[in-house]
Length: 408
Image (tube, rainbow, N blue to C red; front, side, top):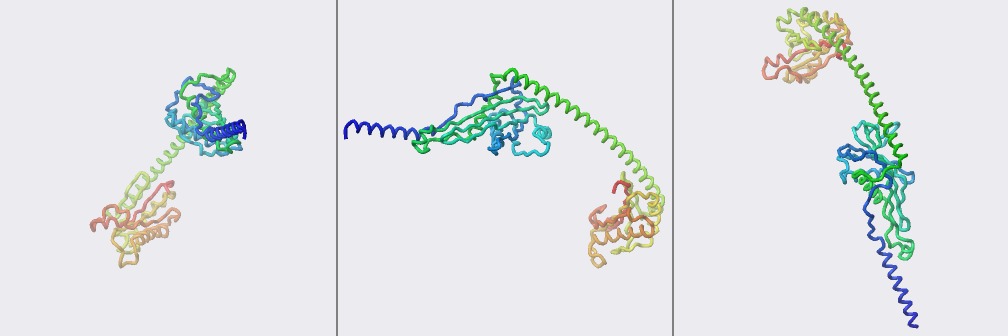
C-alpha cells in the first residue's frame, strides 16, 4: 500500500471517530438559557400590587390532539407562582369540571378568590431526535370583583433536536429534543418574571386601547351585577323580614291561646292541683299536665284507676275547646326493674301507660285521635335523680303535653 493511501485511510478513520464522539456527546447536557419575559406581554397595572391575593389557577384550553396538556400547563404555572413567591396563596383548581353555564368566574366568586388565571395551549409538539419540541401558551390574569383583565401574555418555548447527520452517524445516540414538560416550566418561569418586574415592552396602541376598553367594560358589568345582586338581596331580606314578622305575630297568638287554655285547665283541675295529685307547668310554647302515678296506676300495672278518670274527664272538656292543639302523652318510670309484673321492661310499661291515657281521652273524652300521640320513655327522662323512694315516686308519672297547632 502506498504511503499516500495509508495517510488517507488514517485521516478517514480519524474523521469518523471524531464524528462518532461528537454524536455521542452532542446535547447530552442541554440547558436552556435563563428565561426572560414572555414573547408577548400586555400589562395594564403599572406594578404588581396583588402579592397577598388569593389566586385560583384553572385548567387551560388545549388542542384536541394533545389531551391533558391544559391541565399540566395550569399545574406548572401554579407551582411556579408558589415557588417564586409571586402570590401568597395559590390554589390549583385544574381538576375542576364545569357543567351547563358554570364557569371559572362563577366559582371564583363563590370561593372568594381575588384573582383567577386561565389560558390556552395554542400549540404543542413533542419533539424527537430529529425535530424540535415546541409549546406556545396564552395566559390571562383577571380580577374577580371587577372582571378586569390585568395581564395578558403569550409565551413560546422550543427545545432543539440533534442534527439529522448526527443522528444518522450514531443511530440516535445523540440527545433528543427537550420534553414539552420542560418547555411548560420555561413558559411558567417567563410568566413569573413578567409579574415580578414591570415589563419594559407594551402592547401596540390599538391593542392597548382594546384591552383598556375590555377592562372598563368588565368593570362596569361587574359593578352593575353587584348593584343588581344588592337590589335582589334587599328584596329577599324584605320578604324574609315580612315572613318573620308574620311568624312572630302567629306565634304570639298561639302563645296567647295556649295561656288561655292553661288558665282553663288550671281552673278545671283546681282541686287535684291543691291536693298535689296533678301539677300544671307553663312554658313559652307548651303546657305540661303532670299526673302523679299514685292516682293513675297500681305498681307494675297499666290499668287506669277510677280516681284519675274523673280528672281526665275534666281535662278533656278543656282540650275539646281548643281543637287545633296537638296533645302528646308521655309515660315515665323510675329505674327499678319490672321483674314479677306483666311487662318485661320499663319501656313497655311506660308506653302501655301512655297508651291507656290516650285511649281514655279518645273513647271517654271524645277527642279526635288525629290530635293525639303516645310515647314511652321508660326511666330515661327523670325529673330528679332516682336516689330515694320519694324521688322514684316523683319520676313515676304521665305527662300530657299540650302543643300549639304548628309545633307538631
